[in-house]
Amino acid sequence: MIINNPNTYIDFHTHKIRREDNDDILEIVSLHLGKETECDYFTVGKHPWWTNSLLNSSEKEQLNKLLSLKKCLAVGEIGLDKLKGENLNIQKNILRELLQIATEQQKPVIIHCVRAFDSLIKIKREFPEIKKWCIHGFSRHSTLAKQLINERFYLSIMPVKKISPKYTELIKSLPINSFFLETDSMPNTKIEDIYLQVANIREISVEELKVQLIKNFNDFFKV
Image (cartoon, rainbow, N blue to C red; front, side, top):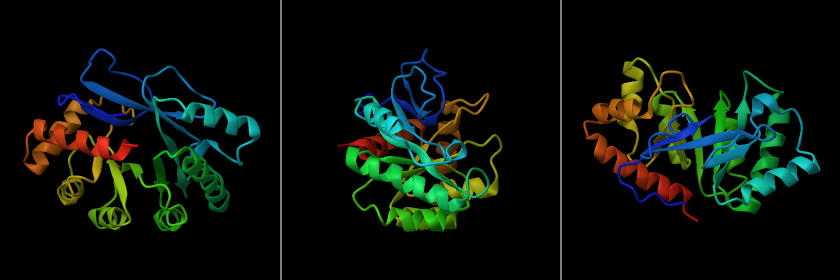
């Protein structure tokens, strides 16, 4: 998929369509396999919170069928979470299986990661064929962000209601070609407001930010 409309706001990660009334907002819906809903452009995967075993043959068939659709942009969200879900070793095995499917389907991956970044980096190095990885909902400090970007991850930044010094430092530190913005379906959160926050922190116009994030999007999803 390529975005040509320079006025487009990209909500890189959400869980349901909320802005279908606005043609200038592109919402990428994250679907959990087996819980699909009607949407336009989407990603699909097995979230570590709700996954306790490797895929069975029916799930593999269903996942591959969805991934073959033109409007399915990536495998995700998939990943590792030390605070919720099965023990980390089981999560690692499930993640590797899903990454193998992403490799076969030649799809980018959208990652959920909580307190398991070292493990994630090691697993990423096992799958060099997957060229594009993005960690969604990133809210950690700028030092970790730099480490992940050096490992060739993109970051999709978690929305915040209140701008903190930590958030400001993170936004200022990000290379302009390394990140996306999202609502993650957070209540009372509009992607336009997030763009304005980030543009103000970086001291650029919203229009400039739109152009850059469209470029990032087109680079990330290009075949």
